[in-house]
Length: 129
Image (cartoon, rainbow, N blue to C red; front, side, top):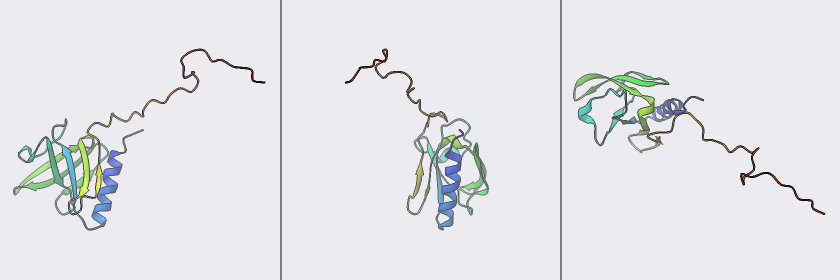
């Protein structure tokens, strides 16, 4: 299956916006493909205001989030791979969702094979009278 992260980001952005709050994106600024103003990075992370009024031409895609914004009055294009998104939350109350830095991809955890015995040996049966 594909990652659920872009779907969750879009849904939470909509929920925050519908409630009249300001959605902010927490991004791993050191991730590959991140194009952001580096002077605003702190501890390898950046918080971006992605409200409709702050982010021009916002696109919340399955692979990338892109928009235009002003940073200290200077216009800039921002490009963030969805895999670099660490969270999305409302500035006013902190409600939202955080994501793991590395969710291990889209592969589900391995399930044990029920056809092999738990002990690793041959199965054995007992006659019960």
